[in-house]
Structures are given as C-alpha cells and as structure tokens.
Length: 313
Image (cartoon, rainbow, N blue to C red; front, side, top):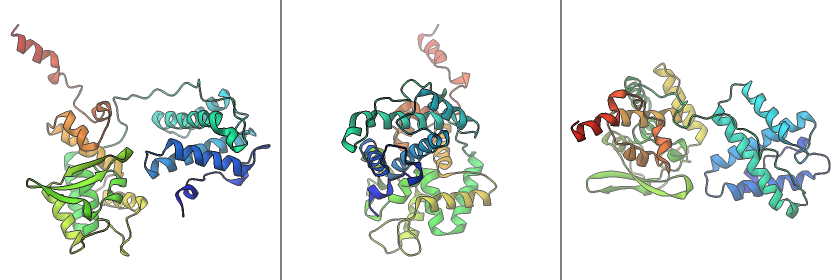
C-alpha cells in the first residue's frame, strides 16, 4: 500500500452535492502530504482522522465542506467538549481544519473545487495551559515496578519499556530503532534516532537499556531492534498494547507517552538541567519541556533568593 493510499480518509458517503468525491479525496490527500511532509506518518494520519471527523460533523448537519462557516466550527468545538476531549486536542483539531481550508483556497482550483471561505479563521480556540501537561506520569516507585515487570516478561518488552522510561523514546522511535544505528562513543553505548522533522540525534544508552538490547538482538547485525515473531518491525499499536499490559500488571494505567512523560519528570526531579532534558526528549521549544517540571512552583527554588545571596543584601 502506498503512502498516498494510506492517507486518503474520505468516505464516499460524505460526498457533498456539487463536489466530486474523487476531487475532494485528491485535495485532502494533497493537503496532508504538503502540510505533513516533514512530520511522522502518525501525525499525517492524525490529520486525516481530524478532517474526516470534521466532514462527518458537517454531514450530520446537512452541510457540504465548502458551505460551512464559523458557526459550524463553533458548534463542532462545543460538541467535542461534551465527549470530554481535552482543550489541547480540540484546539489541534480546529487548527487542522483551518489549515485545510487555507490550502483549499489556494489550491482547490487545481482539483475543480472552488473554496473562498475559511470557516475556522476567526474561531476562538479553547484555552490551553502551555506550562502544564495533562499526561499522567508515574512516581519513581511505579517506574521501578514497570521496569521489573518488563524485565520479567520477555526480552522485547524489557527493551520497549526501558527505551521509553529511561531514554524518553516515543512509540514511533521504538518502531524505527535499528541495529545499524547502535554505536559507541568514548565509553558510551549509543543509539541514533530520527526525530520529528527528520533530524538525527545520537542518544546515550544507560547500562540496563544497552544490556536489554544486546540480549534481544543476539547475533543479529541489521534490521529493526524490536520486531515481531516473524522479524517484522513492531507496529505502533503493539507497542501501545505492550505498555498497557505491563502497566496493568503493576496496577497503573499508563500509555507510551506516559512513560516518556515520566522519564522527563524523573530526570528533572533528579536534578538534570532543563536544557539537558530538552535535548533528551528532542524538544525544539524549551517551554514544551518545562511543562514536565513538577517542582517549578516550589518557592524554595525561587531565583530571587539566588539574586539576594549573590548581592549579599
């Protein structure tokens, strides 16, 4: 299956009057490819899901995609609040819709579609606290329990959990990790990963992580580090199920992102500088990393005390 085929999200039942379904499908696919070129396949699929959900909402309202106006986006936003989606998720979906219409206004004529209005252009997004993460992280004791349970489960499980919990990997990083990218540098075991946007980053592997990887790959010298029983790369969904299953064993509800979140919070709790944790997670913006600092509101850390002590007044 080609990438463009995977990205076609439009169901024939959503074809609006006067807009050929093939033309709409082609426009959406072109938008996803153009907008998400530098993003992961999971992000591009999220775009496809978001715009499909928007079209489904309009279909229920009896409105075509290019007949919508701001009130429809406002109504969709309100409907998402009733199913307990987070403000950040709602804001992302509205931004996705706005991006599609900006593209359609510029490029729609190439597909026989006339788009003149962006119904999301002036929609007020839900407030999102950029200094706070809603992801539930684990305590240090729960993290230790996860690692012990993973080590006792199977070699593959140990690598998945340790990479996320000790190195801050995303599920997609685990999917893409390859034996050829393992290395050494001045006594450090390393693994080079491809971050969002295609940037390559060399990561240091703690002793326990390196040992788990060595035990898993055995004599293999190439290919994915984490594979299925048939030697195929591990699917994103299977990584998620593995983490959830080990979490249930130790009595916690956690996702792959929850383990990555835990890695960040524990690193900061242990005294790692914010800039080092930012590098560990591959964040472009330090504000993203700062959300994981659970102790940032501790008044004992106030910089004002350091200024006063430095001045000696």
